[in-house]
Length: 239
Length: 225
Image 1 (cartoon, each protein chain N blue to C red):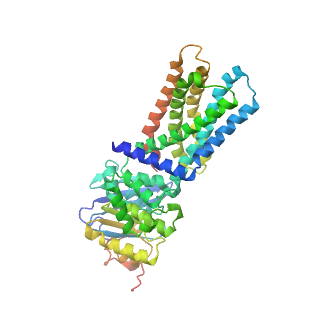
Image 2: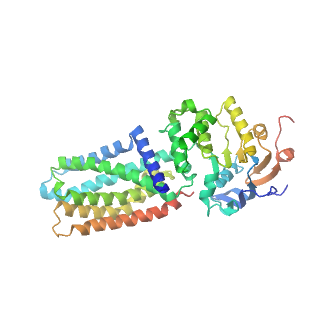
Image 3: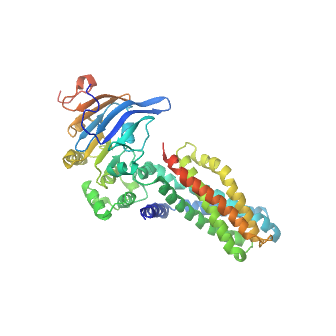
């Protein structure tokens, strides 16, 4: 296995992180990082620890031991800078059902202290084809549309680190294509992308790097094209 | 300045959500009115008995109506993990506490006005002679109670038996605010026979500020996993 930290100067890192839920270790001594200009696919079976790892990087969860670093500094000491730079999409949409899509974005934008908020909201809605539904209550949206609104919320503050947990959930074919195109362009814009999906080929079309997790441990962390797929138990469609 | 904007955003969001579903305030008012009506029906009080009974009746109604409101306050945050969504923003957790507490304070304050009107009518009693003092007592008592309701509401929201847990957690501590408030309200309604109205208000204000500041400082730990 290549060294976990083989890529130079990662800006968002976990170092020797272990996370317990009761007696169950969701992550075991994980060390890895991601830096701007990279796109990494976090891949593994259910219970591998993908969501826990992403929640930790987004500062929603604390490690039981080890540390999460942003720009070399412990995220607990400088949480505000990290949070300003991270956009996170989770299984939960983080949307208030009684607010419209625009009102939701306005609320979260105001928490980030964003200037030119209306313009940013327009751009985020445009990015995910939600302009026509901006005045619809979030509770009245389908799962796919809620996911698009959630993505708009995550991109609203133009984050440098985009962390997406199963971003394609509920999206129709056209939206998947559009999101894939958008994610592919992120590294060119100098942004870091870390995402998970159970459709390996879909993820491989976007990412240049693979982080394979299994039962809380990193099995592989390196360039996607040279990953030992057979050893990792990944069957590729193209053979 | 930025902190004020964040608090304002949270309060306005809660007011907007409440305006759309009209669940919290309506249930608080109805429940509070029901308690006052039941007590009025059970005890046909003469003036002296009203002076003895009404402060406790009012604060019991406020306490129970408050629990309903605090539970509802975190229902919308629980749905779709919105509280986590707020913590993704670079916001001091204590600002989230203040925003939620101010919204709770407003809802409970409105419910209190409705309950006080009903109590004045049903118990045939005028609060006007001591209105200033009563407003002060109600403000401080409600502030402390809303602060405790906000922090314990956030704790209970993450538990399985959240409706029960809030009452079980909050009441033993809120007991002191309620006792001091009932005592001060009774004194004010009797026209302060000991001539020291400030002492009662001071006790309610003091304990409420202690609980509010403590809740403010501890809220950060409540939001953690």
